Length: 120
Image (cartoon, rainbow, N blue to C red; front, side, top):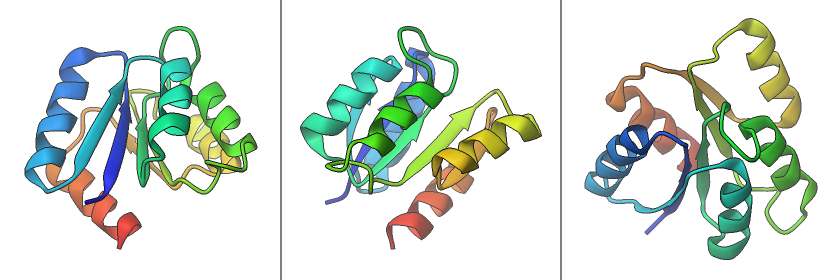
């Protein structure tokens, strides 16, 4: 069973994602800020990370930088899921090696399709 780490400081978003991912057959872990997300990625070694950008303690950009700089977990695909959807944000995400950028509000069907494409 594939493991997906959800990193988002909004509990309602984390719950929605968690529910749809579990129903789709994935095992999930949740972190509520970028620092927790980085530490949880090291601990559980997920197959995919869904990361918000604007979070306390460590932003999604900074957390992704730490993940990509660590050779033990740098291979893990990352999807940004954020309300920040400007072209500059998408360009910065691409430079960091983010695999996909989804803007909020999002379609749960679209999220599942993207995850399936990345993990197939």
